Image (tube, rainbow, N blue to C red; front, side):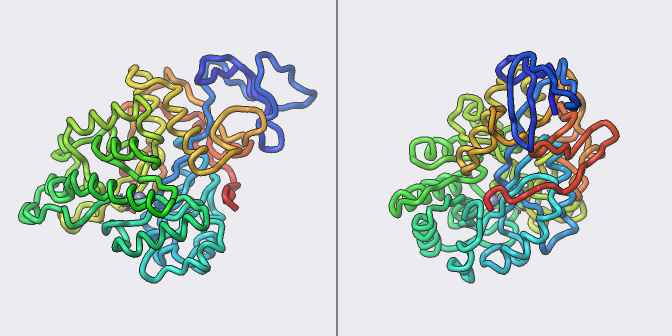
Length: 424
Ligand SMILES: NC(=O)N[C@@H](CC(=O)O)C(=O)O
Ligand SMILES: [Zn+2]
Ligand SMILES: [Zn+2]
């Protein structure tokens, strides 16, 4: 197959030959072979598929929030070609049996995937590390959905074991002893942000970075939400990710979002949000990950202390970032770096993350001029809502995984579940 006349993020105009699932050639004016299928990309931009190393697809245990089918459709429609599913499912992915049960479900995926292994008091490192886990984590230092918070002794043991296994550790860093109990008296949506303080995050990040350095573990900090936490990571050997919601939403949006805006870490002040986005723009943040955490509207409608934490995001991340590119808020090459090249490097996917000969043909085609309004009704997540309704975005025209078209916007059509474990 030949994709013709595509623009790349660096401005080049090229033809791209895809053969046996890989990129076989990238050049100006490639002559099509006899009976080679062509896909016209004139006027549009071809991007490496997004690698989202932080999603919660909820199987097994909470199929009503998301499944591998709905989650991977949502990913494909959002230009995402690889995801890493997190371990806070039911059962949690803390041993070989749980890994195998999830792997069975993941066969329904349209996009490539990895399964991360988790840590609880009951985890079985001997059987878990026997499986091809994409990373160890997110290791929860405070409770979030799934109540998998662990103490420092167990965290140190997990870091130590991962270091010996040469496996990357990702951490949800909040220190619950620094949560502000006074906020418990409030019942407005902002109470969650008042409760889970910025200091609870920065202190936990500081400690996690120290412990990792102590035992020689390779650490990646999940969903950093404050400039303070990002700067601690930037001064260390660790890396960090930022979610689109912490880049774009703040406590100022909570009157509109209500309890739907509850997530961990919580939304921060508008000035912190701006400082976080600045660090995304200038490269101090290593990569973007969505922390796609679907819960149903009915669940999110419970009061601020009863609603579950988390917002969906896998389908809106690239569209939102491309909307910001259209508004000159961020450079297109930076977006590609944050969503594809650097996640591929960091999570060890040498075959993915760039449009280069020999890499997997994980691609998505976008028309950067075709900005439109993001609407929940257009999305494919089973949770049926988004915190980004009304935002400007650019939705992909099609997405392909190793040469197979898995999504076409025309007719809203999906392909077969061709996804494979990219770490197996
Ligand atoms: N981010 C969230 O608020 N929720 C996540 C868990 C997590 O990443 O902490 C979820 O699984 O719902
Ligand atoms: Zn988390
Ligand atoms: Zn998460």
